[in-house]
Length: 127
Length: 167
Image (cartoon, rainbow over all chains, first blue to last red; front, side, top):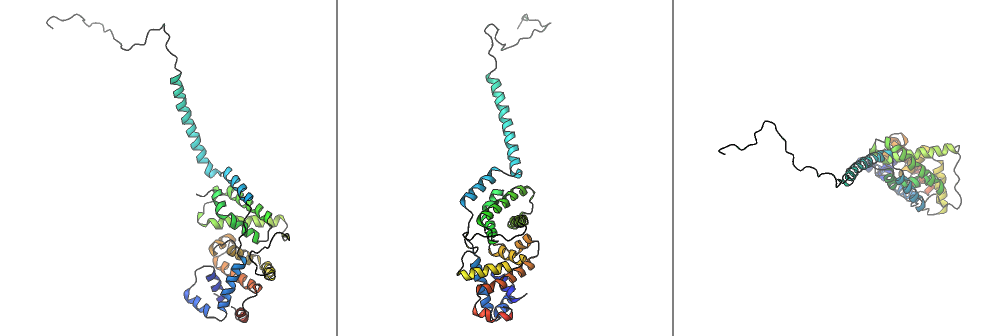
């Protein structure tokens, strides 16, 4: 690897062999090369930002248009929840709006007695 | 799993700066940044290699930039005179102009690798992924770019003295 290549990679925080770096730094002019690389970095440093209006507009677009990858499970879960709610609601409505018994009708039986033919209902003597 | 909005929050400033460093006016850089993230939104369901997220974002950025160049017939992009300097902190007007010219004279591969490193902050492996090459080739391209740009800086006295020795 060329001496400058080693220094350049070192400035970029890429892995370099310590021995190769030591050799590169021992070459006349290496210090100046390093300084120039750092000056170049400063010259190209950039603090420009896109406008706030642009960033806000994009956030709105990207938040409003979720990708199917994200939206599909959410939609399925929402549909399942709606179905479950609809089922519970229908049961509740059925209970609330069951027609009241008419006053002319007899009340519903609370006990049922069955007649069984052949059973002697007379009390047995001695008992 | 990041959403397109998450990726926008993480990377949109770097994408914008990278596009600006390619001498795009602010409005065009915003338009292309928008296109980048709309493409990301569409491509996200098919994106699987999440180890190189930043490289993926900048590969899309590069494709958007190349499409932009094609749509303009590869004509140089004019920067309005009142649109501000293409570089952020010029110590002098002369040096800024010299750096701009030196950047323009670089080969496309060197310029791209250098700007992805210095402006977008990508590592060599990420740049290799973006450009479809190897980290070794990226290291070499960035080193060549630095050597070319170094002389536009004015170079230190020692550097000039040692210039013939390859340092």
